Image 1 (cartoon, chains in turn blue, green):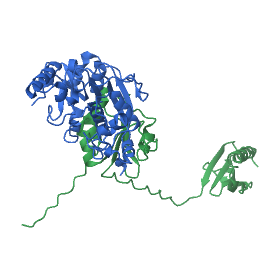
Image 2: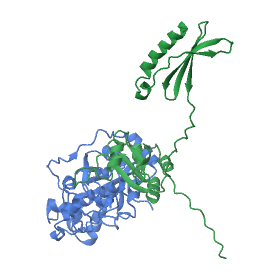
Image 3: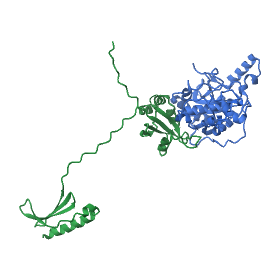
Image 4: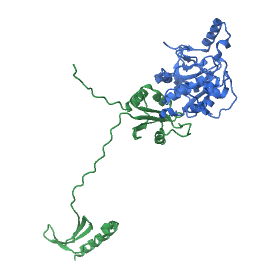
Length: 266
Length: 205
């Protein structure tokens, strides 16, 4: 069964319909969709889009997607990394960003490990549950890393998980390089390079993890995404966005290389 | 003494002094300057002189009355030296450590497709120890340095064109290295396949 393309119009109608049926306000029903906050902060550890990765011209995209012969990143995580679930929190901004790190670890052939988004949010937000900025998440993952999900379950924003050594465990999973992504062309170029991107989307008020380049229903090149709303969303947490719905306009960041976890040495 | 022979012997002594004089053992071999008659094939006698050069080598210099000069190099016959045994080449281990070092910022889109291809990854993980695709700037955050177990690969690839493929045995000996092949199929073919175990037939019917 092919995964349906999720357009902004489709999603907006779905939200209206669901809210109408539930008799809830949009904010109540879709707490996870609280708008991401923009941040005026500087992020010294996040680099600009590297000049060494030339932008791939649009006319080459269809052939390259066809020749790629596979949705590598989404295939790589299949059966290994279950979809994240932010539950009723507003922490998509860390869930999507953490997923990119998990994917990069798989790329490097490090043991598959689900990482804790809430361990990334805690040093920034404490126990406050609110939307955030993806740049904050990336910066924190560069400085402090993310501890394993087994140490800090998702959706648990209480401080009880901040055990004395959680920071040390998080340091084992640090991103070395992040780059800022600003345009759809850069997004697709990275997708063709098999580099995941954390993309913030204004229309959705949401952040997801961009995976592979794929064809949308109308034959254009779009992107496959990992959402953080559990396995019941889309195709086991996976969906497809077209250019209009997938262009990141609330910040996008791509991890390039991770530290090597000490677990590998064992 | 035949004057040709004198001239030849003088030249030879000079050359021996300059070329062979470096050896202490050779310096202990004084030249024998007593000439003797050497019958030639023509039936005439030549005047000859034996000049020891080393303990197992001498020059025999002769001169005929017609002015013909000749030098023979005489060597002591020695027993043939048996060739040194060639150390046996250790067999390729069944399980290799496979590592690829890349610079994620310069790896091309086509190379990333090869690296992402699941076929060779499965084979590498199933039959060998697939160390990983190692970014050239990877580090262990606790030390700020490259992880020790990856260092040999990183050092080896430092001067190479990345991505650089390496197969090593458990002793760290690189048994194969080279640039990343252009296609995933070529990469699969590079990875040694496990040796087939002989079928053991039992007749327990």
